[in-house]
Image (tube, rainbow, N blue to C red; front, side, top):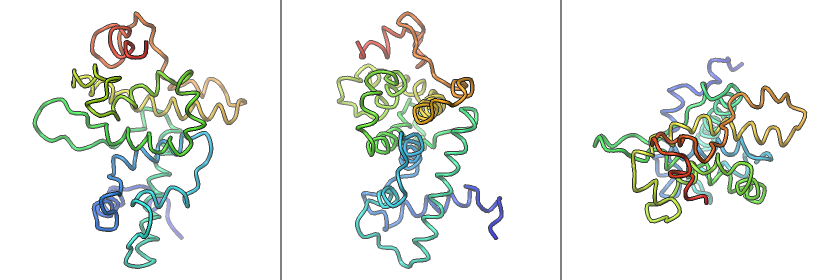
Length: 232
C-alpha cells in the first residue's frame, strides 16, 4: 500500500520530473517545469474537467513518446499526477499555500520576466477550453487574466508595451500570481456550483482595482495610468 508521504509531490519527485522534461523524450516540443506548472494550474481551474488522456501527451509534445519501457511511462504519469494533485490541493487551501514554479534567474541582477513560461503554460491549458473562457476573459475576469496575458506576451506585443518598457513591473505582476490563480480557481468553482458558500469562495479573490487606485503591479502609479491604460 502506498503511504500518504510517498503520494506527495516531494523534492525527489520534482527532480525526477525535471530530468524527464529535459530528456530526449520531450524533444524540443516538450514543456519545461515552469510551463507545466502553469499548464496544470489552468487545467485545474478550467470550467470542465480535462481528462489525462487529452493533456498528458501534450507534456512531451504529443505523437510518439519514445519511452524506453512501459514502466518509465507509468512512472512519468505518476509524477505528473502527483504534481497535478499537489497544485489542486494548494489552490483549494488558498494563496498562502499556492506558489507558481517560475524560471530560474539568470544572475544578471536585472529585472526579468521569470513568469513568462508559467503564464504561457496557463494560457495553453486554458486554451483547451477557450470557448468557455473567452466571454469571461472579456468581462468578469478580465482584471485577473490581464497580468497572465501580459507576462506571457512577447516584447513586440504592442498591447502590453508598457509592461515590457518597464521590466521592473514583471516582479509586481508575478507577485500577484498566487492570488490570481486562487481567484480564478474560486471563480470557476462558483460557476460550476452556484450553491457554494460565498464566504469561502471570496477568501482569496483578487478584486478589480478602481481607475484611481494604486496599480497592483507595484509601480506606484494609478491603475488608469499603468496596467489599466492598455485596457481602455
